[in-house]
Image 1 (cartoon, rainbow, N blue to C red):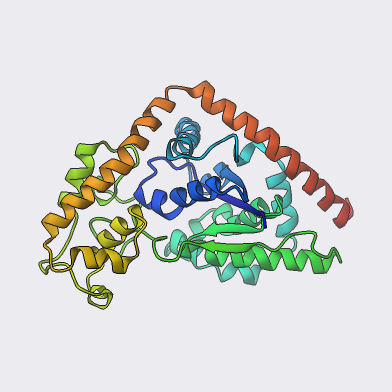
Image 2: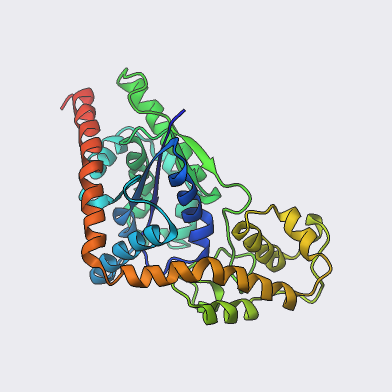
Length: 333
């Protein structure tokens, strides 16, 4: 059975190993499956929920597309476009905002985390963006959405909104209720300096993350300096419970090699971190250096990247504008 898959990545620049293992690597596998129809959206409307430099944002949109292509996503097989070009996203988000309930949004934990203690200073967009995310998905009748653990709650909201719209307007199955595709074991990659914090471009130290544009020497240096502990590598998963940095590095190795955590532990049990880090640096360099070089090459081919976005816009706009037109009719416009 064909799966219609929708997913988006914010063009915030400096995509890193966490983005690759948590999302993009999975996108490539989904793209390569002949049974799937994939739409990959550069969600620039979501990006401006916090202030962006306009020039940097334009560059980051292209860099995100370059990263998709460099990682192995085929733009001829999948639709790649940037969200702001398709006005149906904003239109549908408003209609769905009038269906969703404040109580639903108040339960969204990610807003509380991102807004921090002074949520009064957060933008309305940051608060309501899960509704825009719902519009993104529902416009394309997506059957499945790849999500990490931190986005699972938002997909549940999307499902609630779809069901309520259908019930309110007696439009059975008009908005398709999507299912999650969760990459359970390796969806959350942590900082190289603190195994309890998610890897992030916003962390001050560049040593906390492996950027997808890092060269081999940078990767080796960062892994060498990655935080560990004094004990040898464990012989079972239970021994990792109080060793977050060791667990994170073992998970990275596992994901890059398509191994389970148990299989990786069997390979390295009892060994010291210096030997393991050497192997990890080697596999990281082999996997990421070709991607880094291709991103650099593609960023010098702006016309090529812009054409991919233009072609993707035309395809996405045909689908989304038709869907939002039907929404207009259903609500009485």
